[in-house]
Image (cartoon, rainbow, N blue to C red; front, side):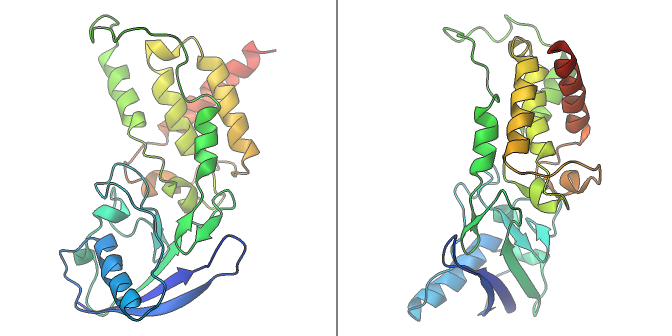
Length: 248
């Protein structure tokens, strides 16, 4: 198939960016979206032009690096799919694709399609961990966990920190990301000792980073490649209220 690409090009964080148009020729429908960009980059390099910079790592849908906005949709048109797992058969011959980085003030563009998502790392550093000394690994059955809690915790822990929730939200809210990290630890016995301080610290850091507020539009859930439910946000809000009252 042949495609027309309008790609955001930006030299560095301080430069002004603009869209550049490229033709992607003889693209196999079995290629992934990133493989298609690889082919385009090979053509650019053969002509002595700078290749399009984009983030990628595992290309297996589990690392969250491949964060692209495709025709205005984070990760493209397929639900529950990362950009690296999006295949070209999702498009038609002759399509025009607009490819740009995730748009949010806390995610500054570093170059072309690469953004700095260090804000997520700092939210995790604020409390998204268990600091108790655990010693050697315990037997899996030594601390019983309710099956429903374990399943729900696992569903929240599936978050890969890609930032699609932020890019999809009109307020650039990081509530779904933060809530997933807060909630999966808050459901487990190991996460109870720091449960209240965790939610206060992580929400405070989220606000400090400049993310917007959640207004319950559900774009985050719709865009999430791991289909994490907004129920995580409700759980985080409940924990935040309880923690705030306990701290008074």
